[in-house]
Length: 558
Ligand code: TEU
Ligand code: CA
Image (cartoon, rainbow, N blue to C red; front, side, top):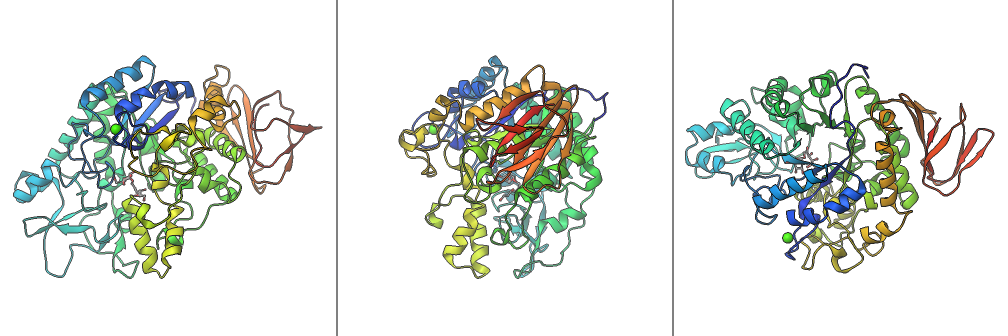
C-alpha cells in the first residue's frame, strides 16, 4: 500500500455487529432491545471492540426483520425509544466506542408513508419515488426473479400499476434516478450523523442502479424468470449516485461507511474503496459466496480449507494497493462461520481459534458478529416450522420443487439458513441462555449450556479469551503498525490444508495455521524471535522445523 496514504480513524479499529432482536432482552418480552445493548456495553468494552454496527432498529413491520423500514427517523417501540438510542450513543462515546447504524435505502417498507402516498396517487410526486409500470394482463414488466423468490413485480394496491421489488414484496425499490428521493436519503443520513453516529453499514447498495431500459433476460430456471444479477451486470453509472452520497454526507463528517457490495466490477475497486472512494470500506464476501449455485442453496457445494485460503488471498491481493476490506467470518445473513468453514466433525475450541486467527490477522478491518467470539454454532431445526427467515422458507420451496424430500430439503437449507446467526445470544447456562426472562422470539440454540459467555469469561482458554488476545495484539503499540498497515504475503501457498502468511511493516509477523486434524510440519525460512499467540499449550520446534498439531495456529514474530 502506498506509503503516503492518509491514515483514517477507523483503520485500527475492531468492529462488532449487533443484531438487536437477538442480543439482549431487558424487559422480558422475548425481543432484544436497545436498553439491553446498553447493559452489555461493559461486556463489549472488555472484549476490546470499538465500533458497534447495529442491524436495523427503525420502525418496521419486520417482514425482513427490520430491513423493511417504515420510518427512517424513528426507533421501533419493540427495540426502545429515541431517548434509548441517544443514551446508547452517549454511553458508547464515554467508552471511546462508536455506533454505526444500518442504511437500508435500496428499498423501504410498503408501510412507509412514501409508498402509501404512491398508492393513493401513482401519478403524483410519490409515484416518482418508486419504479412503477402500467399493469398488463398476463404479462409482467420484466421477467426478473426477486431475491426472495417469485417475480420482482407486484400490483400497486388500489391502482392499475405494478411496482418493482428486488427483495420481498414488502420492500419496494426506491427510484434513485429521482433527485428528490436522493435528497431525502442524504437529509436522513445527515440527521443521524448530527445525532452523533460514527457512520453506517450500507445495505444491498449495489442494487440501487438498474440497467435501463428495463428488459427481459434469458430465463435461468423453470419458472421462466432470471436472476436479478443478469440485470445488475448490465447496469452502469452507480458511481454518480455513490459519489454524490459520499460528498453530501459521509465525507462532511469524516464518517465511517462500509458497503455491502457483492460483485463489484473488477476494475471498480479503486472507485469503491480507493483514496477518495465511495466508501471507507466494503465487506469481503469472496469466502461467503464460494460454492453458491444459481439453482439454490440445495445445490451449493461446501468450502474446503484450501478453497478458504484461496478466497482470502485472492481478496487480499486485489485490495492490497487500493484500500481496506472489512473481513468477516459471518453476519446475520450467513450460517455460523465455525459450522461453515471448519470441516464437518472437527468443530472444537482449537479449530474455532484457528479460524479466528487466520481471518483476524488479514489486512483490513475485522468485524465480529455477535456470538462469534464465543464460537456459537449453527442451530438445529426440528421442522420447517422452526424457521422464521423468509429467505430460508423460499429456499426450502426451491429445494422441494427440485425434487428433494422434505427431510432432505430441510437438511439442505439448515446449513445455510440465516436463522443460524439469529438465534439469541448465549449469555449464560441459565434458562433461555440468559437472553430473556420471557419467551425468546426465536428458539435458543440447545447447545447453550456448553457454549455461553458466562463460562467463557471465567476461562482463560476459552474461544472468547482467545478473541480478546487477538484484539489486544492488534492494538499493541509494538505490533499495531504491522497488523493494521503491513503488507500481506502468502507463504507455502500450495501446501494442502496449511494457511500461512507474513504481515510486514516495521516488524515481520508470520501467521501459520494447520487447517486439518492431522499434524503437519513446516520448515521456517528464518528463526522466530517470539511467539505472540498459540492456540495450544505446546509448540514443537526442532532445528527450524515446526510440527503443528491438528488445528494449531501460531502468530510468530520473526
Ligand atoms: O442483504 C443483501 C443481499 O444481497 C442478500 O443476498 C442476502 O445475502 C440474502 O438475502 C441471503 O439470503 C441485505 C441484508 O443484509 C439482508 O439481511 C436483507 O434481507 C437484504 O439486504 C434486504 O434488505
Ligand atoms: Ca425487549
